[in-house]
Image: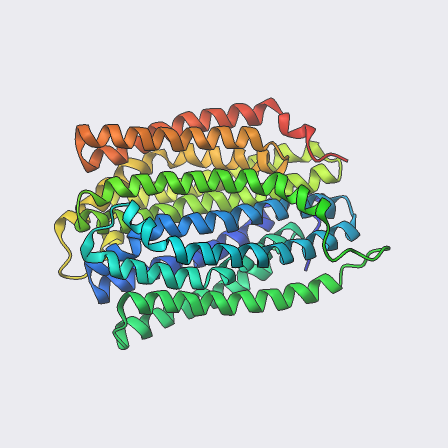
Length: 445
């Protein structure tokens, strides 16, 4: 069911739209965590480290999918808010065709570069083979991941955050069950984790595409839409390409950080892998709020109702900061019970203490990164991609440079200390850009 985000009370409209998205992303993060939990519990510390070592590389591919999702979502939201349904249908078909081509090309590139990339991040020899296996299966299923993310973005641009939630819940539960069957019962180790994710994502992708195609037929337009439009590609690319570059740069930066972490041995890698999964849950929850704010901003700018956006921003920020308070309390005061979920009885104290140290260092600063990401939602929704990229790349560069410097001074602990300073500076930049109102000059009727 599509929903017009340009009517009703701004705050309550946004909250009702975002809450299903948040529930969905928690299920998504749940099955991502399940990969590491089951690998660590039933296949050992090295298996956990192998999955974690490939994580920054998989995030490069994920970044492209998410960036393309952002581009199509903002553009389709704008046309949907403007009630230009012919353009909506044209943009949707263009997005799906482009996604298929791009994901196939990236899969080929991924198979060729998987091994060199793992060597580039100094993956320890004792986990290299398993890390490569996990990465290759991930790349094999990348087409499903890409198309699923794009269809989710399309549903959200139409004001429908509930349909993707249903698919996520089913996929997440299926992934966890398959993880357990393949790893705990059939003892397939890292391969079992990888294939479980492959199957779950494949089913979710096919199901969401079928529902989307039926939904598109119900969107009536006065003129026949085009199957593919290069104008639509340009509009989508104007948002997607900066988003992809920004996210890819972040992923490449994370690879540099991972290479520093890897130099401290597999126990530190295992601890960091567990902690970064938990940290990702927190940051992704803020990003979900941001995606909702982006769609809300784009629809209202398309409808010529820019005055509603500040109300949506405030509601999104309050909700995001509430989640930040919860994650801070859990990860700062009681990190070890959560980290223990990933560890088996033979895991080292070094792995556990490394994860706790990371979480207790970054958790107090979730409030800052939440503000930044919500501000970024308005910037992206308004097409102010230069400001969005400047703030995010500042965060990345500072984190990488300071991680190298601080690791020489304080060892592994120095890597974590780089994050808060980078977050604070980037947050100030994003807030200033939001307050400047430059995003209001984009995507207006």
